[in-house]
Image (cartoon, rainbow, N blue to C red; front, side, top):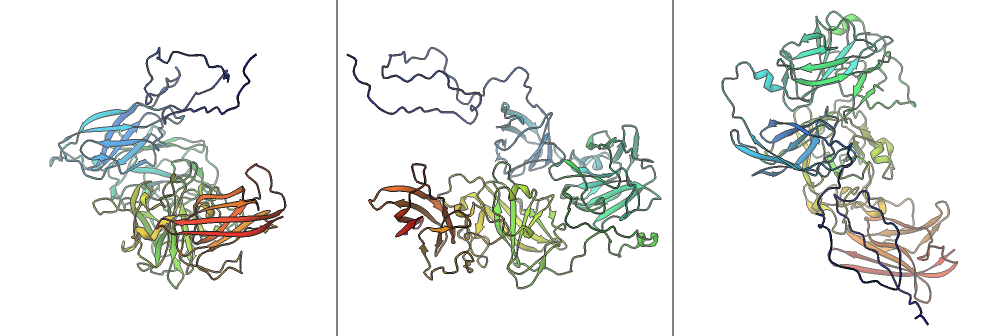
Length: 633
């Protein structure tokens, strides 16, 4: 007679590494109480856990084409195919890992700029390396180290000064109006807009504009300011450009830009391609515009284009159609002091230091999400944002690329918020939005490093600093183990910006972010419109209340300081735990937890009397417990 089978548990533990997570499967699994001894000595060579899976025969990984020194502290990596850099590390011997990595604006993920904390010495040799790069499908590239020698500066440039001013991606073809027929706000003139992405002035002297690989035009000795725009068009034609742009009439501008699409190139005198764009078939009265990601779209500006200023988002505004502007008389074209009829007018109000402050930052968004910067108007007057710019301060104290906020034309009321992001859907798809009018999509913003960086808000005209913050990922609450998608919130708008104790993680109950409205961790305690009967005690948590309209229970809480975590459970009258509401969840200063009435068993709790138990604990050691009887309906 066989022995009866004994019940028990089977634990199947599957381990994988960051580089070995694809193509795994479990097949023909047999569970038996009779265990057959097996040889525990492996008969194959152990697999290196860091070794990547063999690639399929038709997979060709990107290859490094060249390295270029953009400055003493910045190197550009040029690849033949797009690469993913999220998990990549770029290093220089004797200096360390890059403090920032980003795609060049025109790269389509083929050009990667890496910034380092210290300058390299001209004439010295360095080992430049990278690891963790993948192609767009996640296939990991091999690590590579290249020995480079930074050339010393020479006095005898032999006429190469202008050549050294340009590197691929430093000057971009930013907008193309190939079919102006039907324009009403502008004269029907074809144009090509250039954009200087660098923080230095650039002279166009001897730079070449090449049309369709046949027509070559030498550009004049005109200087474009840092982050400035220049508009090229045929001399003798009428044109209107925004006030921030520079108009450059050219005698040899192509007689007509083909509506069907042609290749445009910017080349140095030696033939190096600075930028190129093969524009597609043109649409009448619509320009092709480059987005911040390097993609192109038809202009959604009601005028049909944005010559000389920040490009549109590409998304049509169907709710507020704008009537076409009246044609401008020719004599108006030569008056530089006359306001541009196509540019929104903004009151000339000077923002003072400390009136706008950094209030919330999201450096490490969810996959598919977008970084954002939130500003708060703590003054007693309505203020414009359009006269401000934002930039990252480098380790030597200077400002990196400056990003004007001129496209944000709204006035911000006292106690108002401004949410800046490159992609609105990357915010609205992940967080609760209470004030959509506080959210603005800005085509160009600084890239926020996940670990730490210094952001500066300043007046565009005189660069007077309005606010500055050197944030760190260490400012997150200790209970936050995965920081992806968790925003850093300012606790008290009146306290110092650069105080680590004045910042912490957004609460879990708020969805880990409060873009465009009051922070979950803010010390300000306004009236709670959801619960006008809120208690006067500084710290309390209420029993679950059924919300008929929402179809779930709500648990309101009110705390005396940020940094509390919460555990909350439901017990029956016999003392058995039957439901879990929160488990080590980071709370805000005030808010609510929700519970659908479900039990640990997966079913709904039966109607009856139960006990609600909550325990909140703080990193400073404070622990508070609450127990209340309530009715489950």
